[in-house]
Amino acid sequence: MSPRFDSRLASARQLFSACVAQGGKAWDHSAMVRALETLARFEIGDA
Image 1 (cartoon, one colour):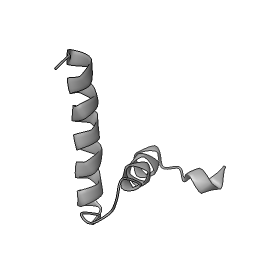
Image 2 (tube, one colour):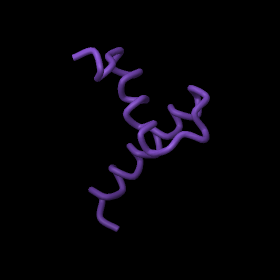
Image 3 (tube, helix red, strand yellow):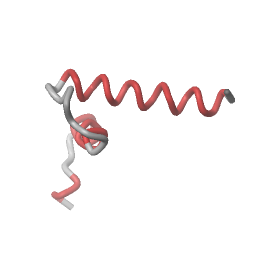
Image 4 (cartoon, helix red, strand yellow):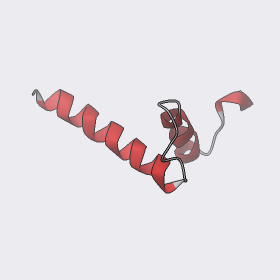
């Protein structure tokens, strides 16, 4: 695997860990957006 792929995989794993911490263990991939919204303290629907 290339180092570039490894860093993206690590980022995805961190986002999924953030989802689990928010009680979203059973959420689908859209949970990554929720995690990013939480980290940014901004909801995309607020735009």
